[in-house]
Each structure stands twice: as C-alpha cells, then as structure tokens.
Image (cartoon, rainbow, N blue to C red):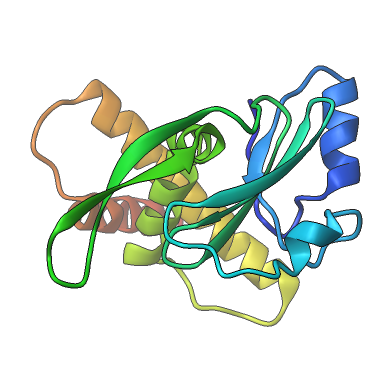
Length: 178
C-alpha cells in the first residue's frame, strides 16, 4: 500500500496506480477535479463519528467528521467497513465514535512520514531558503541525518540523544574538510 502527500493525491493518479497493481490510501482535498460533487459540499452538518462515502468499483472516497471534516481516497477498502475509536470530549469524558476502516488503515501506514517530519523539525540543518537548490540540499542533508539516526537506533538499543549525535556528525564532517 502506498501513501502520498495530500498535494499529490488525485483520482486519476489513484486509478493509474490501481491499474499497475499498487493500492493507495491518502487524504485528498475536496476541491480536486473528479472528486464526487455530493461530498464536496455536504448539505448537512455531520456529527462527530459520522461519515459519508461514495464508491466506484475499487475507488472509495470518504468524508468523515472527527473534530473537522477529513476527506480520504482509497483503492483497497470499502465504505461499509468501520470500527470504534475513542475521543475525549471538552468535559474530559471519553466518547466512543465510529470511524471508517480507511481512517484506521491510513493512520497505521502514514506513521513513518509523521515521525520523519517530526525528527526533521527538531534539529534542522541549514535555514529555509527561497532558492530551490539550497532548500533541496538542506532537505537531503536532514533526511540523511535522520536515516543515520534511525539506523543507529535500530542497531544500538542504548540510550542516545539525537542532538548529541547530530553535533558529533557535523563536527566529524567539518574535520574531514579542514
């Protein structure tokens, strides 16, 4: 299964991936072309836990109400599958609500991207730039450091600090070029 960034998700792309035997599940913006019109402008206000969906063969589009509308597109689930989750209300009481299985599937498979973004934002190398090549260089440097940290974490189950590891990596790279 494949997840994308919301900017790239579209119905023609989902169909193309499905034709090539690749399943996908991702959030989609409601204003995308070919997104079902009845899901774009829902005439009724959904309560928390309610969802509305449309299915055309293997392609499923769902709008689910959590705290706000969440729109998803999937090629490997059906609309009628759902499960129960808990949400904390404003008064602190836990309430059980239904959610489509598409949401569960999406959350289970998108976790790695969220962790990568979180690690990338903690100790970024370089500064943000409007020049694409500087941005790309800093992005790839950050991703290399994160990959090194993930590999180190996988093979060494000791207590470690990411900041200390990043600083030692940077000082080692500097000493190589002095």
